[in-house]
Amino acid sequence: MLVRTLLLDKKPEEVPLIVESLLIKVIQEYECRAANKHLVNCIGDLKGTDLFSRPEKPLPEKTSTSNQVKMGEEEPNLLKVTEEVSSVVRNDDCVAEQFQPGVEITIELQQKHIQELRNSLSSVKSGMEQLRIQYSEDFTKIGRQLYILSNAASGYHKVLEDNRKLYNQIQDLKGNIRVYCRVRPFLPGQANSSNTVAGMEERTITIITPTKYGKDGSKSFTFNKVFGPAATQEEVFSDMQPLIRSVLDGFNVCIFAYGQTGSGKTYTMSGPNVLSKESVGVNYRALNDLFNLQAQRKGTINYEISVQMIEIYNEQVRDLLQDSGNRSTLEIRNTSQKGLAVPDASIVPVTSTSDVAELMNQGQKNRVVGSTAINDRSSRSHRFVA
Image (cartoon, rainbow, N blue to C red; front, side, top):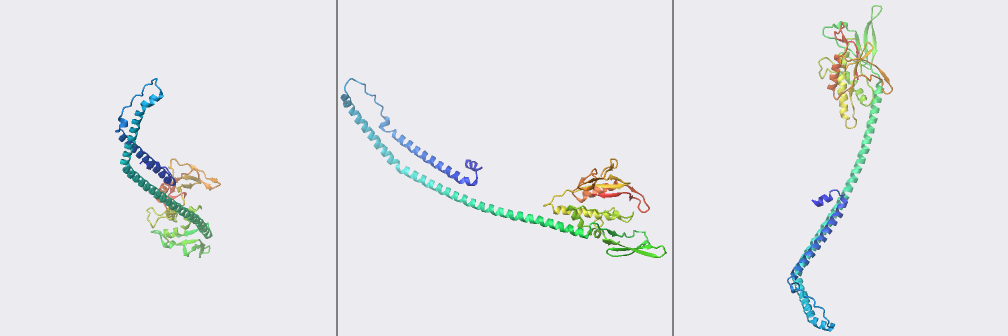
Protein backbone atom coordinates (compact mmCIF):
# COMPACT_ATOMS: atom_id res chain seq x y z
CA MET A 1 0.00 0.00 0.00
CA LEU A 2 2.89 2.35 0.86
CA VAL A 3 4.65 1.63 -2.45
CA ARG A 4 1.43 2.19 -4.40
CA THR A 5 0.89 5.53 -2.65
CA LEU A 6 4.52 6.52 -3.34
CA LEU A 7 4.19 5.70 -7.08
CA LEU A 8 0.69 7.17 -7.51
CA ASP A 9 1.78 10.65 -8.66
CA LYS A 10 4.95 9.57 -10.50
CA LYS A 11 5.48 9.56 -14.22
CA PRO A 12 5.78 6.16 -15.98
CA GLU A 13 9.43 6.73 -16.89
CA GLU A 14 10.34 7.45 -13.19
CA VAL A 15 8.87 4.18 -11.84
CA PRO A 16 11.85 1.84 -12.70
CA LEU A 17 14.41 4.17 -11.05
CA ILE A 18 12.29 4.50 -7.90
CA VAL A 19 11.73 0.73 -7.67
CA GLU A 20 15.46 0.06 -8.13
CA SER A 21 16.36 2.58 -5.38
CA LEU A 22 13.85 1.00 -2.98
CA LEU A 23 15.18 -2.51 -3.63
CA ILE A 24 18.80 -1.41 -3.05
CA LYS A 25 17.86 0.20 0.27
CA VAL A 26 15.93 -2.90 1.34
CA ILE A 27 18.91 -5.15 0.51
CA GLN A 28 21.34 -2.91 2.43
CA GLU A 29 19.06 -2.80 5.45
CA TYR A 30 18.62 -6.58 5.34
CA GLU A 31 22.39 -7.22 5.21
CA CYS A 32 23.03 -4.75 8.04
CA ARG A 33 20.43 -6.38 10.27
CA ALA A 34 21.79 -9.87 9.53
CA ALA A 35 25.34 -8.79 10.47
CA ASN A 36 24.11 -7.16 13.69
CA LYS A 37 22.18 -10.28 14.62
CA HIS A 38 25.26 -12.47 14.08
CA LEU A 39 27.40 -10.14 16.22
CA VAL A 40 24.82 -10.18 19.02
CA ASN A 41 24.77 -13.99 18.98
CA CYS A 42 28.58 -14.16 19.20
CA ILE A 43 28.69 -11.73 22.12
CA GLY A 44 26.00 -13.75 23.92
CA ASP A 45 28.10 -16.90 23.55
CA LEU A 46 31.21 -15.14 24.88
CA LYS A 47 29.47 -14.02 28.05
CA GLY A 48 29.73 -17.58 29.42
CA THR A 49 33.56 -17.59 29.26
CA ASP A 50 35.99 -16.81 32.13
CA LEU A 51 36.96 -13.48 30.59
CA PHE A 52 33.51 -12.04 31.28
CA SER A 53 32.88 -13.95 34.54
CA ARG A 54 36.23 -13.21 36.31
CA PRO A 55 36.04 -10.16 38.61
CA GLU A 56 38.47 -7.39 38.07
CA LYS A 57 41.45 -7.29 40.40
CA PRO A 58 42.38 -4.03 42.13
CA LEU A 59 45.45 -2.33 40.88
CA PRO A 60 48.48 -2.77 43.10
CA GLU A 61 49.25 0.16 45.38
CA LYS A 62 52.22 2.30 44.71
CA THR A 63 55.21 1.64 46.92
CA SER A 64 58.58 3.11 47.22
CA THR A 65 60.28 0.02 45.74
CA SER A 66 62.07 0.15 42.42
CA ASN A 67 60.57 -0.60 38.98
CA GLN A 68 62.44 -3.85 38.75
CA VAL A 69 60.73 -5.13 41.88
CA LYS A 70 57.30 -4.17 40.41
CA MET A 71 58.02 -5.92 37.14
CA GLY A 72 59.09 -9.00 38.99
CA GLU A 73 55.89 -9.05 40.98
CA GLU A 74 53.62 -8.41 37.93
CA GLU A 75 55.11 -11.03 35.60
CA PRO A 76 52.98 -13.90 37.02
CA ASN A 77 49.85 -11.75 36.62
CA LEU A 78 50.69 -10.86 33.00
CA LEU A 79 51.23 -14.50 32.19
CA LYS A 80 47.83 -15.38 33.62
CA VAL A 81 46.10 -12.60 31.62
CA THR A 82 47.86 -13.72 28.46
CA GLU A 83 46.72 -17.28 29.01
CA GLU A 84 43.15 -16.09 29.62
CA VAL A 85 43.12 -13.97 26.42
CA SER A 86 44.48 -16.91 24.44
CA SER A 87 41.75 -19.09 25.93
CA VAL A 88 39.09 -16.50 24.98
CA VAL A 89 40.44 -16.28 21.43
CA ARG A 90 40.42 -20.07 21.14
CA ASN A 91 36.85 -20.15 22.47
CA ASP A 92 35.87 -17.39 20.01
CA ASP A 93 37.39 -19.36 17.14
CA CYS A 94 35.44 -22.40 18.24
CA VAL A 95 32.21 -20.36 18.34
CA ALA A 96 32.96 -18.90 14.89
CA GLU A 97 33.70 -22.34 13.50
CA GLN A 98 30.47 -23.60 15.07
CA PHE A 99 28.26 -20.87 13.47
CA GLN A 100 30.17 -20.50 10.20
CA PRO A 101 28.15 -23.11 8.18
CA GLY A 102 24.81 -21.49 9.15
CA VAL A 103 26.09 -17.99 8.34
CA GLU A 104 27.38 -19.12 4.96
CA ILE A 105 24.00 -20.71 4.15
CA THR A 106 22.19 -17.53 5.23
CA ILE A 107 24.48 -15.33 3.14
CA GLU A 108 24.11 -17.65 0.17
CA LEU A 109 20.30 -17.50 0.46
CA GLN A 110 20.42 -13.73 0.79
CA GLN A 111 22.64 -13.40 -2.26
CA LYS A 112 20.33 -15.69 -4.20
CA HIS A 113 17.32 -13.62 -3.13
CA ILE A 114 19.15 -10.43 -4.07
CA GLN A 115 19.91 -11.86 -7.49
CA GLU A 116 16.25 -12.75 -7.96
CA LEU A 117 15.26 -9.22 -7.00
CA ARG A 118 17.77 -7.81 -9.48
CA ASN A 119 16.42 -10.07 -12.19
CA SER A 120 12.86 -8.97 -11.36
CA LEU A 121 13.96 -5.34 -11.44
CA SER A 122 15.61 -5.87 -14.80
CA SER A 123 12.44 -7.53 -16.09
CA VAL A 124 10.31 -4.64 -14.80
CA LYS A 125 12.62 -2.09 -16.42
CA SER A 126 12.50 -4.01 -19.69
CA GLY A 127 8.70 -4.20 -19.53
CA MET A 128 8.42 -0.49 -18.77
CA GLU A 129 10.67 0.32 -21.69
CA GLN A 130 8.52 -1.80 -24.00
CA LEU A 131 5.39 -0.09 -22.69
CA ARG A 132 6.97 3.32 -23.24
CA ILE A 133 7.84 2.38 -26.82
CA GLN A 134 4.34 0.99 -27.38
CA TYR A 135 2.71 4.10 -25.91
CA SER A 136 4.91 6.30 -28.07
CA GLU A 137 3.89 4.38 -31.19
CA ASP A 138 0.20 4.50 -30.20
CA PHE A 139 0.35 8.24 -29.56
CA THR A 140 2.00 8.74 -32.94
CA LYS A 141 -0.74 6.72 -34.65
CA ILE A 142 -3.46 8.64 -32.80
CA GLY A 143 -1.86 11.93 -33.82
CA ARG A 144 -1.84 10.87 -37.45
CA GLN A 145 -5.45 9.73 -37.29
CA LEU A 146 -6.52 13.00 -35.67
CA TYR A 147 -4.70 14.91 -38.39
CA ILE A 148 -6.47 12.86 -41.06
CA LEU A 149 -9.85 13.36 -39.36
CA SER A 150 -9.20 17.09 -39.03
CA ASN A 151 -8.43 17.37 -42.73
CA ALA A 152 -11.48 15.27 -43.57
CA ALA A 153 -13.73 17.43 -41.38
CA SER A 154 -12.32 20.58 -42.94
CA GLY A 155 -12.93 19.17 -46.41
CA TYR A 156 -16.42 18.05 -45.41
CA HIS A 157 -17.36 21.53 -44.22
CA LYS A 158 -15.93 23.00 -47.41
CA VAL A 159 -18.04 20.61 -49.49
CA LEU A 160 -21.11 21.51 -47.44
CA GLU A 161 -20.47 25.20 -48.02
CA ASP A 162 -20.01 24.64 -51.76
CA ASN A 163 -23.20 22.58 -51.90
CA ARG A 164 -25.07 25.27 -50.01
CA LYS A 165 -23.93 27.94 -52.46
CA LEU A 166 -24.76 25.80 -55.50
CA TYR A 167 -28.14 24.85 -54.07
CA ASN A 168 -29.12 28.46 -53.49
CA GLN A 169 -27.77 29.50 -56.88
CA ILE A 170 -30.17 26.97 -58.40
CA GLN A 171 -32.99 28.51 -56.40
CA ASP A 172 -31.97 31.95 -57.70
CA LEU A 173 -32.00 30.65 -61.26
CA LYS A 174 -35.52 29.37 -60.72
CA GLY A 175 -36.47 32.87 -59.64
CA ASN A 176 -36.26 34.83 -56.42
CA ILE A 177 -39.94 35.65 -56.76
CA ARG A 178 -42.27 32.84 -57.78
CA VAL A 179 -45.98 33.14 -58.31
CA TYR A 180 -48.26 30.11 -58.21
CA CYS A 181 -51.96 29.89 -59.02
CA ARG A 182 -54.30 27.48 -57.27
CA VAL A 183 -57.86 27.02 -58.52
CA ARG A 184 -60.31 26.28 -55.72
CA PRO A 185 -62.83 23.49 -56.41
CA PHE A 186 -66.56 24.14 -56.12
CA LEU A 187 -67.95 23.76 -52.64
CA PRO A 188 -71.01 21.59 -52.00
CA GLY A 189 -74.13 23.40 -53.23
CA GLN A 190 -72.34 25.67 -55.70
CA ALA A 191 -73.33 25.42 -59.38
CA ASN A 192 -70.72 24.43 -61.90
CA SER A 193 -72.25 26.84 -64.40
CA SER A 194 -70.42 29.69 -62.73
CA ASN A 195 -67.09 28.28 -63.84
CA THR A 196 -65.00 30.89 -65.64
CA VAL A 197 -61.93 28.75 -66.28
CA ALA A 198 -61.66 27.87 -69.94
CA GLY A 199 -58.51 25.79 -69.71
CA MET A 200 -55.42 25.04 -67.64
CA GLU A 201 -51.93 23.92 -68.49
CA GLU A 202 -48.85 23.43 -66.32
CA ARG A 203 -48.02 27.14 -66.27
CA THR A 204 -50.97 28.82 -68.02
CA ILE A 205 -54.61 29.37 -67.13
CA THR A 206 -57.26 30.78 -69.48
CA ILE A 207 -60.19 32.75 -68.04
CA ILE A 208 -63.48 33.46 -69.87
CA THR A 209 -64.29 37.17 -69.79
CA PRO A 210 -67.32 38.95 -71.30
CA THR A 211 -66.58 41.48 -74.02
CA LYS A 212 -68.16 44.80 -74.71
CA TYR A 213 -69.89 43.47 -77.83
CA GLY A 214 -71.70 40.60 -76.12
CA LYS A 215 -69.34 37.90 -77.21
CA ASP A 216 -67.40 35.74 -74.84
CA GLY A 217 -63.73 36.46 -74.77
CA SER A 218 -60.83 34.92 -72.92
CA LYS A 219 -57.58 35.93 -71.31
CA SER A 220 -54.56 33.78 -70.54
CA PHE A 221 -52.25 34.24 -67.57
CA THR A 222 -48.85 32.62 -67.06
CA PHE A 223 -47.42 31.63 -63.66
CA ASN A 224 -44.51 29.57 -62.41
CA LYS A 225 -47.01 26.78 -61.95
CA VAL A 226 -50.79 26.30 -61.97
CA PHE A 227 -52.48 23.92 -59.51
CA GLY A 228 -55.92 22.69 -60.55
CA PRO A 229 -58.94 21.96 -58.33
CA ALA A 230 -57.78 18.36 -57.80
CA ALA A 231 -54.34 19.36 -56.49
CA THR A 232 -53.57 18.14 -52.98
CA GLN A 233 -51.88 20.03 -50.15
CA GLU A 234 -48.77 17.86 -50.62
CA GLU A 235 -48.51 18.78 -54.32
CA VAL A 236 -48.82 22.48 -53.55
CA PHE A 237 -46.11 22.30 -50.89
CA SER A 238 -43.69 20.14 -52.90
CA ASP A 239 -42.82 23.02 -55.23
CA MET A 240 -42.06 25.33 -52.28
CA GLN A 241 -40.23 22.76 -50.16
CA PRO A 242 -36.70 23.51 -51.50
CA LEU A 243 -37.00 27.03 -50.12
CA ILE A 244 -37.15 25.71 -46.54
CA ARG A 245 -33.53 24.58 -46.74
CA SER A 246 -32.52 28.09 -47.79
CA VAL A 247 -33.94 29.39 -44.51
CA LEU A 248 -31.42 27.34 -42.52
CA ASP A 249 -28.66 28.49 -44.89
CA GLY A 250 -29.25 32.09 -43.83
CA PHE A 251 -31.59 33.31 -46.57
CA ASN A 252 -34.85 35.16 -45.97
CA VAL A 253 -37.84 33.29 -47.36
CA CYS A 254 -41.44 34.51 -47.39
CA ILE A 255 -44.44 32.45 -48.51
CA PHE A 256 -47.84 34.19 -48.55
CA ALA A 257 -51.27 33.65 -50.08
CA TYR A 258 -53.17 36.43 -51.83
CA GLY A 259 -56.74 36.38 -53.10
CA GLN A 260 -60.28 37.51 -52.52
CA THR A 261 -62.41 36.35 -49.62
CA GLY A 262 -63.32 32.68 -49.89
CA SER A 263 -60.65 31.83 -52.45
CA GLY A 264 -58.93 29.37 -50.08
CA LYS A 265 -55.98 31.32 -48.66
CA THR A 266 -56.38 30.01 -45.10
CA TYR A 267 -56.98 26.46 -46.33
CA THR A 268 -53.80 26.50 -48.43
CA MET A 269 -51.59 28.01 -45.73
CA SER A 270 -52.99 26.28 -42.61
CA GLY A 271 -55.58 23.70 -43.61
CA PRO A 272 -59.16 23.02 -42.49
CA ASN A 273 -60.41 23.35 -38.94
CA VAL A 274 -59.92 19.61 -38.36
CA LEU A 275 -56.39 18.77 -39.44
CA SER A 276 -55.18 15.44 -40.77
CA LYS A 277 -51.92 14.23 -42.24
CA GLU A 278 -53.20 14.87 -45.78
CA SER A 279 -54.94 18.20 -45.13
CA VAL A 280 -52.30 20.18 -43.20
CA GLY A 281 -51.28 23.34 -44.99
CA VAL A 282 -48.05 24.89 -46.17
CA ASN A 283 -47.23 26.44 -42.78
CA TYR A 284 -47.20 23.17 -40.84
CA ARG A 285 -45.43 21.25 -43.59
CA ALA A 286 -42.73 23.91 -43.77
CA LEU A 287 -42.29 23.78 -40.00
CA ASN A 288 -41.95 19.99 -40.05
CA ASP A 289 -39.20 20.25 -42.67
CA LEU A 290 -37.53 23.03 -40.71
CA PHE A 291 -37.27 20.99 -37.51
CA ASN A 292 -36.24 17.83 -39.41
CA LEU A 293 -33.35 19.69 -41.06
CA GLN A 294 -32.38 21.13 -37.69
CA ALA A 295 -32.18 17.62 -36.22
CA GLN A 296 -30.12 16.34 -39.17
CA ARG A 297 -27.56 19.14 -38.79
CA LYS A 298 -27.43 18.99 -35.01
CA GLY A 299 -23.92 17.56 -34.97
CA THR A 300 -22.45 20.41 -37.03
CA ILE A 301 -24.67 23.48 -36.60
CA ASN A 302 -26.82 24.68 -33.70
CA TYR A 303 -30.05 26.50 -34.57
CA GLU A 304 -32.37 28.53 -32.35
CA ILE A 305 -35.92 28.80 -33.69
CA SER A 306 -38.45 31.33 -32.37
CA VAL A 307 -41.84 32.62 -33.54
CA GLN A 308 -43.43 36.05 -34.00
CA MET A 309 -47.04 36.52 -35.06
CA ILE A 310 -48.51 39.91 -36.00
CA GLU A 311 -51.44 41.29 -37.99
CA ILE A 312 -51.99 44.46 -39.98
CA TYR A 313 -55.48 45.91 -39.66
CA ASN A 314 -56.48 49.44 -40.65
CA GLU A 315 -52.79 50.30 -41.12
CA GLN A 316 -52.04 49.29 -37.53
CA VAL A 317 -49.62 46.53 -36.52
CA ARG A 318 -50.72 44.35 -33.61
CA ASP A 319 -49.10 41.50 -31.69
CA LEU A 320 -51.26 38.37 -31.92
CA LEU A 321 -49.29 36.55 -29.20
CA GLN A 322 -50.37 39.04 -26.54
CA ASP A 323 -53.70 39.04 -24.75
CA SER A 324 -56.27 41.25 -26.41
CA GLY A 325 -56.47 43.44 -23.31
CA ASN A 326 -52.72 44.17 -23.32
CA ARG A 327 -52.26 44.61 -27.06
CA SER A 328 -50.97 47.94 -28.31
CA THR A 329 -49.98 49.26 -31.71
CA LEU A 330 -46.45 48.25 -32.72
CA GLU A 331 -43.95 50.28 -34.68
CA ILE A 332 -42.21 49.07 -37.82
CA ARG A 333 -38.56 50.09 -37.78
CA ASN A 334 -35.86 49.98 -40.40
CA THR A 335 -32.58 48.37 -39.32
CA SER A 336 -29.32 48.22 -41.26
CA GLN A 337 -28.87 44.48 -40.67
CA LYS A 338 -32.37 43.03 -41.00
CA GLY A 339 -34.23 45.68 -42.96
CA LEU A 340 -37.78 46.20 -41.72
CA ALA A 341 -38.43 44.75 -38.28
CA VAL A 342 -40.92 44.89 -35.44
CA PRO A 343 -38.64 44.77 -32.38
CA ASP A 344 -41.43 45.18 -29.81
CA ALA A 345 -43.36 42.12 -30.96
CA SER A 346 -43.29 39.02 -28.75
CA ILE A 347 -40.64 36.43 -29.63
CA VAL A 348 -41.37 32.92 -28.31
CA PRO A 349 -38.71 30.14 -28.57
CA VAL A 350 -40.03 26.85 -29.98
CA THR A 351 -38.61 23.35 -30.31
CA SER A 352 -41.26 21.47 -32.30
CA THR A 353 -44.10 21.89 -34.77
CA SER A 354 -46.66 21.37 -32.01
CA ASP A 355 -45.26 24.39 -30.14
CA VAL A 356 -45.76 26.54 -33.24
CA ALA A 357 -49.25 25.12 -33.81
CA GLU A 358 -50.32 26.14 -30.30
CA LEU A 359 -49.01 29.66 -30.86
CA MET A 360 -50.75 29.89 -34.25
CA ASN A 361 -54.04 28.79 -32.68
CA GLN A 362 -53.60 31.41 -29.99
CA GLY A 363 -52.89 34.07 -32.60
CA GLN A 364 -55.82 32.97 -34.75
CA LYS A 365 -58.19 33.56 -31.81
CA ASN A 366 -56.84 37.10 -31.42
CA ARG A 367 -57.33 38.07 -35.07
CA VAL A 368 -59.90 40.60 -36.21
CA VAL A 369 -62.72 38.84 -38.06
CA GLY A 370 -65.97 39.98 -39.63
CA SER A 371 -68.99 38.63 -41.45
CA THR A 372 -69.20 38.72 -45.25
CA ALA A 373 -71.61 37.35 -47.83
CA ILE A 374 -69.28 34.40 -48.40
CA ASN A 375 -67.72 33.83 -44.97
CA ASP A 376 -69.32 34.71 -41.64
CA ARG A 377 -65.91 34.75 -39.94
CA SER A 378 -63.73 36.24 -42.64
CA SER A 379 -60.31 37.48 -41.59
CA ARG A 380 -60.31 41.25 -41.83
CA SER A 381 -56.54 41.62 -41.41
CA HIS A 382 -53.25 40.42 -42.87
CA ARG A 383 -51.49 37.88 -40.64
CA PHE A 384 -47.72 37.34 -40.59
CA VAL A 385 -45.97 34.42 -38.92
CA ALA A 386 -42.19 34.79 -38.64
